[in-house]
Image (cartoon, rainbow, N blue to C red; front, side):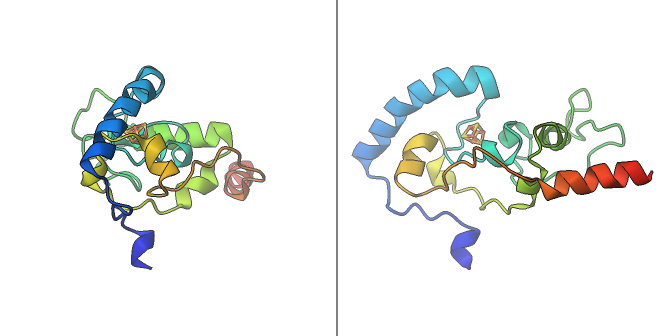
Length: 149
Ligand code: SF4
């Protein structure tokens, strides 16, 4: 379904709500900027990217690497940096959250940029975060694959 891939700003953000959202964003930033280096996309997908902010990718990709990742795991745009999706993969593996990497995240709704992701979850514009993952079959498959090597 189309709504699985795009986030329409439903319910729409009124001017008043946008101001309130900016106010909440101040408090959200106190936690998310120092810990996750949040880029204020307003549609938080941290829980499905191993708690590494995918929006630190220079191309702002939300569903995996661009294909230009270097063989050593570095970024094609900034060769001195790790590809953020390489980091996401490693962190997801560490936390046993690989299966969440198979989830297709919606196309970014730029209208939600610099709004509070917490408020957007509350308003049902975004999905609630997935806090716990039990039986990560995809991580188990990786372990089996390694054992066969
Ligand atoms: S709100 Fe967006 S930019 Fe901020 S941490 Fe979450 S995914 Fe990253």
